[in-house]
Length: 217
Image (cartoon, rainbow, N blue to C red):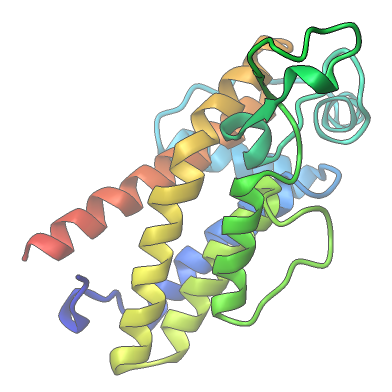
């Protein structure tokens, strides 16, 4: 349980909200000179090597290929694709023997993870207007929202937002973010978007470690 004394100051909570909001925008909008420079500066601050010197047009093409247009390099940025398993009865497979065991498949949208994420959103009365609930940008945006709410409230309300934030961080984002980064890395060379995912992972892991310390106090 997170105590009131373990909560960050309003200023620090707002700063965290801004970081998550920025990272969400990186994975939901076309790159700009300002956003790429911000990713580079954050990477430098965290001692993450920056080795992407491509033009903005090249980065924009990569953003489209990785996250928008299904194709050879496309990586579906949804939690359910990485975490959920679907049981398909043999009878539903063409030419199969109904007596055969069902098979397990993965990589599909709108699974149990999607529903669980949506339930977390509903607990604080929010609903994403773009993409599915478990899109990486929506999940990061939700953490930003919780930090903002925590900064704007006091007492038990602030603790409630903090506890939901830690729950969502540990039960969702940290369960699949590394797999997403590895898949993006496999799709091409290490560049801006793998670095941005590493940044998100570092920030989330720091948040988890901080929450563990605060709960042990």
